[in-house]
Image (cartoon, rainbow, N blue to C red; front, side, top):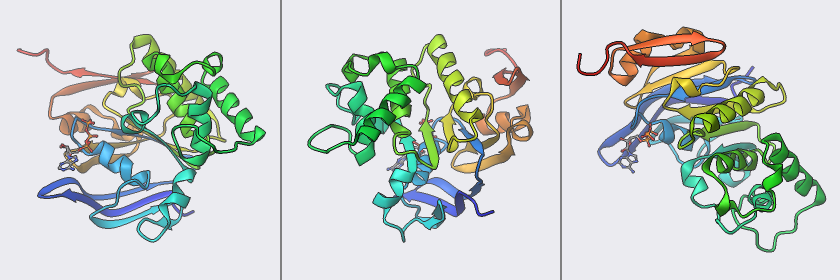
Length: 265
Ligand SMILES: Nc1ncnc2c1ncn2[C@@H]1O[C@H](COP(=O)(O)OP(=O)(O)OP(=O)(O)O)[C@@H](O)[C@H]1O
């Protein structure tokens, strides 16, 4: 079976800086991946490439069987759902929540003169319901809480019925209850065989939802370890990636990590 995402020898350089270096990574149908690593490890850079929004300086990237650089990215992007802080900043605050989701069908962020079919409208409403924000459909996006916005952003990313869903730090800025609700929503998505391939970037092992199958551990632009979560998420690998002596615990489908020694000892 050919890989859904296939990166070979991928490096990204900006001026003298190497942001990611010699990445070899394959993602297959049905897999649910977490990309974990410290600040500046290259997670967002890698996700931008998977979203066909950035090009590598070296190596090859095959997304859904299409080679980046040889395919029209505007045809490819609707097949890849994407939500990130940078994209969220472009959503107009004075747009209704329903339109924020609906406009993804045309790859735009604000409604203007596009004609939407009834089918699009009902898909947008179904997605808002699936993420528990149906009651907010007529509210202005700018009036939502951060947790509500995150859910709307994921609903928007799913609007085109993509084959891959990429989420860059979906739990950033959420309080404890908001994080737990989001982790629950992502666990449900992960458990649904009809869901697209999932790739979720995070800094925190506590944000890994049950049902995720694989982990790519990035440290300083290179892969520290990659594979099934249970094999990769060890204290040894995590300590190496984050440059700190860490302990890891696992139970009830969730993960916890903390420093092996309290600071100052
Ligand atoms: N255009 C650029 N020119 C030079 N360096 C850059 C550029 N863009 C990003 N970087 C650097 O590349 C590194 C990787 O950035 P990236 O945003 O991919 O990391 P990240 O793992 O997503 O970080 P964070 O967890 O803090 O969001 C960082 O050190 C960043 O400062």
